[in-house]
Amino acid sequence: MTAAAVIAAGAGALAAAALVDVAGWLATRRPHPGPVPRAGRRPVLVAALVRLGRRLGAPAAPEDLDARLEAAGRPLGLDPRDMMAAKGAGALAALLGGAPLAAALPGRLPLLAAVGLPVAGFLAPDLLIARRTRARGRAMAAELPDLLDLLRVSIEAGLPLGRALAEVGSRHRGALAGEWRAAAARIDLGVPQAEALARMVARCPVPAVSTLVAALRRAERHGAPLSDTLAAQAGEARATHARRLHEQAARAAPKIQLVVALMLVPSAMLLVAAALVASLGAGT
Image (spheres, rainbow, N blue to C red):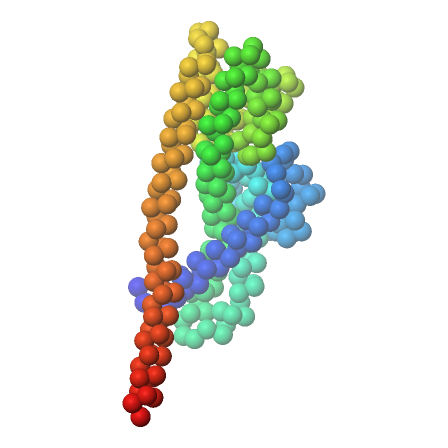
């Protein structure tokens, strides 16, 4: 791989990261989870990209795009068709917006930039979905132990599942609690419980939620008590969250040491230099 190709690839990666950061900021403008926003409430930039992509002709959506959007929480209320339209328009916008900079590059870099910029603009929404899904998964995993304990208490008090999910979800403001409230609302509206729980699993990128729903279905089918199962799942969720925190702390330690070294070494060198200057001045 030539140096020009490496530079072009780096530029494309930086452009994609910038687009992802902008889109992520737009997607997190709403302070708490709630109903999916309507298309008319989307940010102007996103709505303009969707309209432009539809006029240009959006490519066909991959089969797993709808599932990935569900796991990401339907950012900005986008469906697969809107997402592909935004991706196509983003590729065109990246090409046109980066054309002046690409034209000023030397050698063969303009040609490579002309290829890398639209690719970055097209792939940036996919990176946004993956990043948002991971963030939702981490937030939900942190909420899960407390919600499971409250759910166990609610079910032991004799509440039906839909009412228990609503009561527990109303006492928290996190993403997982919002999905539990949404599932309870669907059940109240007459949606079959199995369908509402399946939708909740699709929107919660946490393996423990799938395990919880499987336990709820077994209890409904066989009439088995849920208290011990929910208590065990809460303990396992806490242990998993604690392991994740330990892993994050272990990864953060080298970074902290690097920052400390970068701050202390120049300071020590300045002190040594000052001592040398002072000794030289005293000798003369």
